[in-house]
Image (tube, rainbow, N blue to C red; front, side):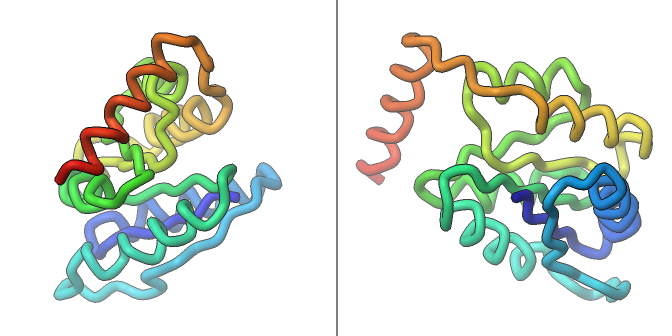
Length: 148
């Protein structure tokens, strides 16, 4: 299951990608917003996706805002989240293969719809390598997070 949300800056891209996923028969839950509110703030849309992703091992999330950075920074404050801000499919593939990312952040103002579709498709299709060095690094990141 992939849980998806955005702020006003990512609403149009979110709606297009949710429709794309639905058409491809991917299990997707749109967590809003459902209408444009130019005064909304991205933090209110990040938490529901984070909670859903952390609720089950195989869940994934996607967050979209204008530059992707705000949603990524907030999501990564939660233990167990490995959010990545990605701008091309090669980067998205590397983030899944090497770092087992579980939330994809997209920068709506800096990528086209076609690029977003390619990034998402690649990110969803790429499994974690489970290579010992990658497992070791993720374990170290998790330990460092416990110290804060």
